[in-house]
Amino acid sequence: MRSARPTVRLAACLAGAAAAGVAVVQAGPGLTGFGPVRAAAFPRLAGQGDPGHVALTFDDGPDPAATPGFLDALAAQGIRATFFLLGSMVRRAPGLAAEIAAAGHEVAVHGYDHRYLPLRGPAATSSDLARATELIFDVTGKRPAFFRPPYGVLSGPSLLAARQLRLTSVLWGAWGREWDPGATRDSVLQTLLRGLDGGVTVLLHDALSVSPPGSAAALAALPALLDECERRGLRAGPLGQHGLVAT
Image 1 (tube, rainbow, N blue to C red):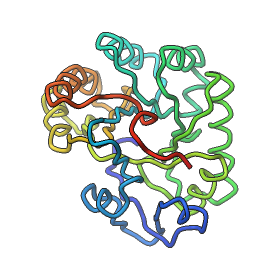
Image 2: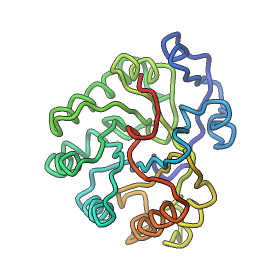
Image 3: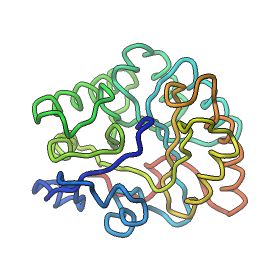
């Protein structure tokens, strides 16, 4: 997920994906691109889980310039999260990917390359997901259970490839829009709080490439987000503790 707002395209699901309860089609624009519609029609795809829990997820890392700060902020409050890793970033920083897993965080698949999946064919899509999944497993020693597509845009081939790899596709219900020009700690926090509720999956990014130059708005907003979850009596943690049934 990067600077463009996702527009998930809907299409009749492949048989396996439909059986898994995920419906995404390829004629768009898709209704699952809109948070309320996605949550109502496809709650598992939207990451809707335990009403007493908030799933904390990060995309696009591991980034040596940003991820360590997120790990420190999470450790300071004893919180674990899910990191949707890019294979290309893991290849560049394998030690950091291993550190994420060693700290008890959940590792998940964001693809190998950050590319728009509906423009890729079945073979390229399958290869991308398989390559990323195996690399993440080899580097971290943990087999990923979840998949989130780049830009939040799924395709029929990506659903099939994810199912073959035993990956559950998960998007989100609240995000910080830290990539918006002029984003600040307060703007990110207020955007997050508009969607924050029990059972929601939160999306942030642990890569500076999605933020305005020099900005670390998502990192700056993270402690306040965790404090607000605690104030509301909501447990924050990884998707694996969110009550979602894996594929």
